[in-house]
Image (tube, rainbow, N blue to C red; front, side, top):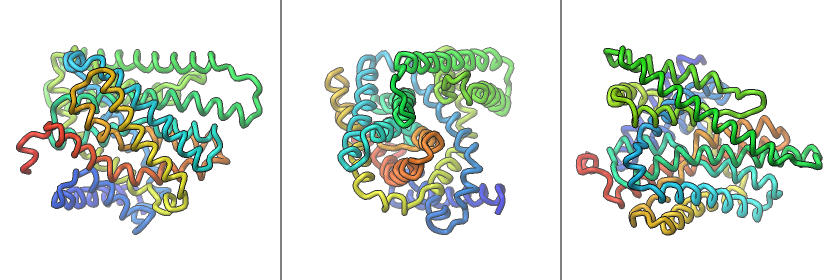
Length: 398
């Protein structure tokens, strides 16, 4: 068993299952995950768990491209048209999911501080699933814009919630009497601000050097080189301050789409390159999931899933109503925010390392429930876009 063999298996499996699910009118993403589940540690074990973990760099690489593309979909003119609804919806859907999950897993038997930690992990949405489904069906409209904005921004909210809850839980477990909450909040804010600044610098340099690029390959090399250099530079944080390469990449994409004359060439070059890594990302994520984890959790897993589904939908509905969002957004956008993968899995790994005594519980909940959210999420996103009439006629007939 070696890395080249595993990547080959992942590519072939993703391709075949992505094609197969087309016949039952499901998004390709669902096929990629199902294929990964089959060849992963739960069934055929062609991609052993330890080998899959060794390929985590592919997942991180794909997420950088996804985050950049999410930022690229956030045009200022389109956001101004939505304006207040975006802010209202993203706050309500994130906090609602956090509170619903926390409450239900607490009722199911988790101690309150552990419940808050699990709620924070479940607050974010998986941008890779959303952007892949939207691009696959060439969807355009207010629901698409809201989904892309939410998946980008609520990752930052999820990271913030995790930083706060994990610090409080750590202090409690260490019997620390005084919690320096203001200092914690200040560190979090500084981390977010630095990440945004790094993203702006990255976008500016990409735009500055893009004038010298002539071919598609040059655009790909330039864009990825800058993104990965700056993302890697802040990957491990700075003096105890957590920084977000994904947030930086999203800001870089936002900068390019709004202020670069070369934006079409930059993003179109990644359109021919990125899908290979999206496929690998989803297959490897599916391979990592263990079905037996979900079966062992019972009430806690059920509470988590219900909390996430209800929280995302109710939060989007309430946020949309309060801000007078378009009716289609209020009714259907919540269905497109169910998927969890990248940030949730990343926080799961961090939490398992940070709290070794809780690692089995955290991994079981975060990875086990991802099976359900990643299989239902793409389908629900497609249904939301279809209900909102945002999937064009060509995509419907293909």
